Image (cartoon, rainbow, N blue to C red):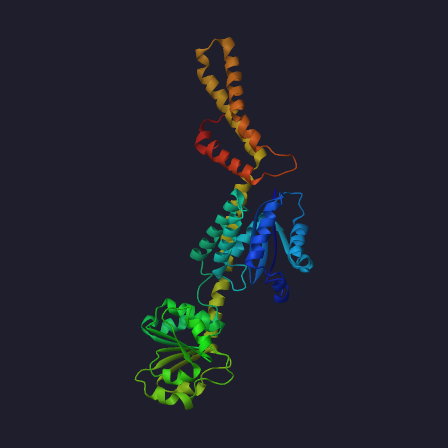
Length: 427
């Protein structure tokens, strides 16, 4: 058997290629079913995100996995096979293990250190389990990947600080005021606004209003968040009287908040309002930065902090790669320790030695002529006891172990070849 990785990622394929290989949940499930039906593939994992389409296969050595995957994709979607053949990369064995660990650690992400990939990997693993395509080998492999991800997160600063505009805005807001006690006004209902809303509601603000060009779009977003209220953009100037925090992210080509429509509301305030304008073009007329009741920040104010956070993450890459490499070598060493020929040889050598030792221990109770027979009897008994396990461990001369044989070898190592049993090994 062999571990093989085939995949395309954001690092080597443009979006127009990746989108032609985008897989729905049903398509991923269908591919896993086809892998299961193919006896040549023992275990499989399909990992698909906006930045990658990857296949991890534990398959027979004689299977051309490159052609196999291409043919499945072609059956799924005409033309996909050719796109796949031209664009994908292949890794085998230890290199495939290392790549998976780097993916889990966020080292292979478009944004270094992002955490979402771990949940996406767990989802892919769950799908694989449900389709009976993760057994002993992939269970061990994936759980090691999750351990790597945790080690990198806890032992490095690879995911420190916000590196997206929306999250940087939330981080800045939290540094400026107590969001949980604030009356929050979100201006806009697009993608960036939705991301910001998701993190704002976690702080449970005292009041949360979402304003959009149409009431329908505002209400669509408020339905995702309990207690959120909907409003129209035309209402924004008047809402400035009570808001403590305003986050602006619309697609408007002209400012939404201007001195002309907002001055009266701002003049009526007794405390400054914090306004974070992450829109391009800007939603807030920059002239308002001079108003005594306004603390205004725009996207450029956030970019410097984002750049600093990115630099900090990049500096952590060597430390994170060292953790990945350590775990890769440990996993490879464990896998190599399960070489069935070596396990069989060790079993025979060690238990024959045990038999000889025990025969010599009781030899004094037998006549000299019987002592040799006693030793032969002990050795024969040891071989008979090992006959079943060894027969199960043996495989064809041109094959590496199946998942079941790896599991058996692992059990043999832990149950029959544990270190404490070796104390009396005189072989």
